[in-house]
Image (cartoon, rainbow, N blue to C red; front, side):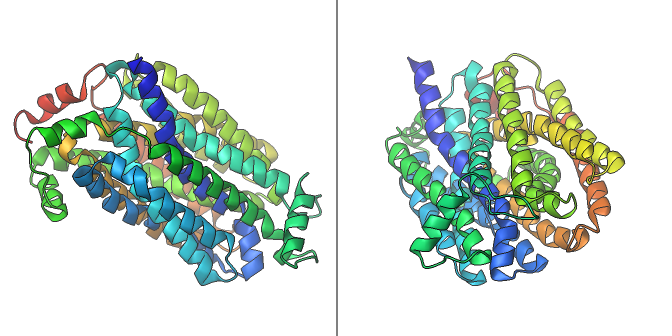
Length: 450
């Protein structure tokens, strides 16, 4: 019965991950459409990436949400956060200028960030010892299912581009646009594809808000509260994180491993279709189709990963995942992104690493290696650092990459080197936590000094 309960709560909480990845990919799949509709520059696109759920917006939300989840409880986040998400998505749906679109991306990103530390913490605290890795992996599957559904929808609704016919459901886009007085073909009509995709996220967010408000509070958080430990203020909690040497070492390890990977992943999450269309020369529809295939492989790989992660050593699994990521960029550099074979090999390898991703290990280890009283806050601080620096990198990337992908080779070399760094940090610092309870891990690492 308890096993079913942990799985049910995992699925409910994982809707947050669906909406996180869904927001990133919904923005990415329609990026070229928004660029044409609002006459955006590459710099504008860089700012959209920088303040979105992919980077700075999520960073700001994470550091707020982490401390709130530790002070007021995990359920506090699930009671209110989806309302913010729905407001952000609504702003994007109704955008008619760049500031409005930027505001929508920011609000949505902040909401995503608020939910992430609470999500991974809640799942870990409500899992059985031998199911913790499985449940984290299942939550990671939502990061694959969200983009898959969004990209399928984007493919079906895709407007005609590059001499190709539009998606099978583009007629529906025309009908919706006609309701708003847009009847002529062009950017004003085409952008309704993206508006409808974001509308689907609004619906899922409402469902998530309804379900997550019914969750029970984390028992471990309630135990800390019942023990009489006074929950520190936000600033005191922040200070406590950096007064303990074990915390500092752990955050350096996890943030370093995650950051070097996320600098690459954040670019791919937001710019992949744009890269396929510019450097690769694909149409919007075919770029989405290739990405759909990638996410299907990611889901299948993540499912297989969930079956073994609690049974085998983590270090070899980590090596396989990040090794495939490094190899993906080696292959695209040697075969070339304008080659269909090169794109297919790159997409397949990048999909495999996405199923055994650094983010899954980060979510698992970050929820294991800190005491309950500031477990979410620690994740919030690290997520803030990682996504914040990813925002800055996104602004730099667009200038390295160029308007039409002329700097792709330089960018690809940098991506490969960052992934090698992540591989080395993870292999050196991988903890041995398999088969241990959170309480046992805390005692081993901190003793009574928490």
